[in-house]
Image (cartoon, rainbow, N blue to C red; front, side):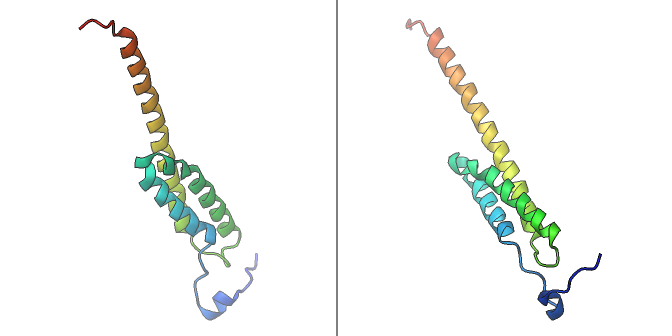
Length: 110
C-alpha cells in the first residue's frame, strides 16, 4: 500500500500529537495522583477510553498523527488508577462490614 505524502513528511517534521493522546495522558496523571482523594480516581476509565481511542486513530493514520507513546501512557495510568479505585472500594466495604460486626457484637458491658 502506498502511503500518501503529507505536508509534515515534505517538510521533514514529525506529525503532531493526537489531541486525545495528550488528553489521555493528562487525565491519567490526574486520576492516578487524585486516587488519594478517591473522586478523581474515577477518571481512570476515561483515561483508558481516550488512550485507546487515540491509539486507534494514530494506527489508522500514522502519517497524520503522532503521540502513540502518550496514548499508551494514558491507558496504563488509567488502568492503574482504576485498580486503585477498585481496591479502595473493596477496602471500604470490608471496613464497613467489620465496623457493623463490631457494633453488633458490642453488648454494652465494659
